Image (cartoon, rainbow, N blue to C red; front, side):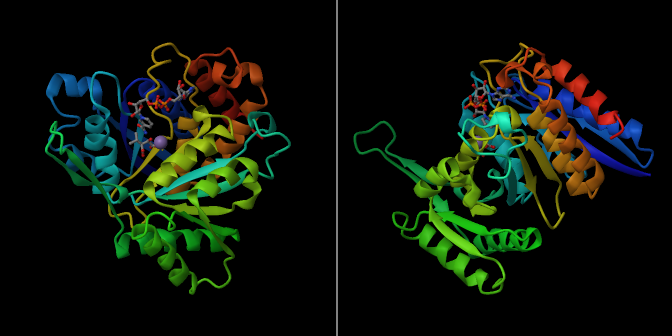
Length: 356
Ligand code: NAD
Ligand code: IPM
Ligand code: MN
């Protein structure tokens, strides 16, 4: 019997609504599989916690999370607390301090009706974006000088270390080799004459060790175009923190929207827990109404199972997402259905437990 400890951070807005459905799925797995059990610890951290306590997490919060096998997070951020405080002190802090430098965001069309792209099918839209997740444009380095004065100056410095750049690019080459897919690097060396020129050089340098991997290198503006016009060009994509953030929302747009996009924040060395979360935010516009699509958060559970080495469950969850997408009336309104968040979760569990 394998027991996995999971730290739950439901967070804000629709975060708790979708995490509840993911937990339903985990509990169904536990019931169905005698070899697996889960221990959950729930942390109430987020914007409400901040308004009560003046901080986004307990002072020893990182210490508390350290022993978990995985963190399962909903969403962070809500009107009333400045985003740069709520996100930097909770979500981004965990990604950085737990050295979750790999962000795995699949862009995979799971059902042909979900893409707004004319004449594109599941065969055309099936790639993996590997986003650098620990430094780059998100390093949090800068200054705000002469605040409020006419000579005011703001600096936000991108940080691209040799170690940080090499390890994410190497990870991507390994993934591309394993999957026998092409690898595309997305950068912007024509304008960002230090960071992105360096990125491109490292991409070429590391590539010498992977002569079997076919590579492409695109500027981020052109890559944005190709995400929409020619998604079939992509196999594995590696890019910087900010570019990866933006590109994966385009990825969501071509595969069914924010309700279906997932991301895993991985520390490959397993020195720290990895964190699984939907790509979407707290969606204040639909929070508390049962309108949130839980399938992104459920796909995160699939990524978590894969990470644990429970590949059978990882793929069963993904197959079940495809199954439920065949029942349009069983879906939430963002996908054209009439069901609530928890009704989708209930139906999902029924389908998950159906044999074949
Ligand atoms: P958002 O992802 O919360 O919402 C964007 C749009 O997608 C909205 O129209 C929303 O209704 C819709 N949407 C999102 N998730 C959905 C779901 N599961 N089902 C159906 N529709 C869904 O992005 P935003 O509005 O830019 O940000 C809101 C807040 O969330 C901000 O505070 C932002 O900083 C934060 N945020 C957090 C995360 C995170 O925790 N990982 C990610 C993105 C944004
Ligand atoms: C995401 C989010 C975060 C990011 C924000 C909330 C800081 O947009 O996970 O995509 O930019 O990484
Ligand atoms: Mn984002």
